[in-house]
Image (tube, rainbow over all chains, first blue to last red; front, side, top):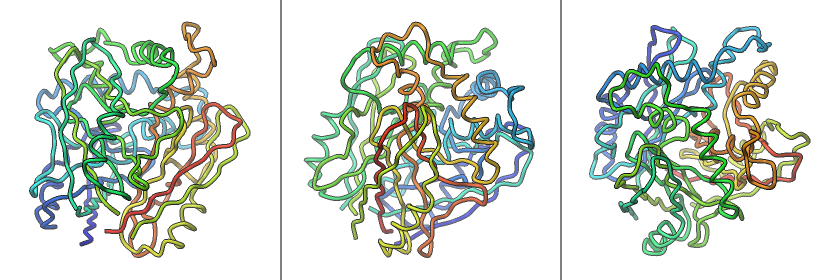
Length: 134
Length: 134
Length: 134
């Protein structure tokens, strides 16, 4: 049993968190897998995948500010595209998240959602969803 | 072969690192799996899972201070629960770690232990342990 | 089908990013696995695995400076080995990356490479490569 899908994500800001839960649940349902793991993988180097609060949107407002504050676009950066802050955030947040599948459902905490984290938008982006049974 | 367990972790401070090695080894033994992978997953948005030094406790003292210093509870945060620093640390440290199982044992470096990282304690928390054979 | 390999990495600086793509592709070819996942795991607590830009080496120059700037070796550190900055970076960057295998190839974005990230070199280091079919 091998299942792999690629989905598209469109971002509208330089930095943005796009909730992926609906797409992940759809692909899981389509796969028919009952027990296993799901890898959500970002193939871009100025973006990533993260898990965080789904209820109060203020959390994302605070994350947005704190990420820019902690990982700014330093004057000393030499990369010509001017997006080295996005590369830094990408390595810190990470390219993927791995989720548990139980009884045909993703295990997520009450307050958890999975986000595509854009750090150099707006852009058209891709996310891979790989499911392994077991 | 499908194996999934949920264990409880109790934390006693706002920020704390709880070593999980004993529990992970117990669950691995119970599973009987000889070769595969183990996903250690945190279902909370103000906590995470990290791997770091198990020998000198001073390393955890330094990590504790550096995390608070690098990811403070900024005055500009708007989320009403006052724990946006914990949400930030959660996304930076990450919700899970994946380990290798070889000959019925976890592969960990000499100085590596797996920690539940609390960023908004004290609390009662859960950790999922998913094992896949292969 | 169980596949596990350990490879050696030698670093030459305090901080360094060593591209692993060639070795990962070689091990994948040797495994003969067509569909599945690859876990690239670092068993050290002052190093990690990260995915980032493979084209312009200036990105690595910028990452190097920004990591040192954001996670310095604070005066208040008490760990006697003087490498607590490396432990901090290790927890932030993470001990592993998980990759997707499709049709016998690793899925990596156009600009993505996998790096061993050294934070307390120069040293002789190890990296585990675990492949699971599925």
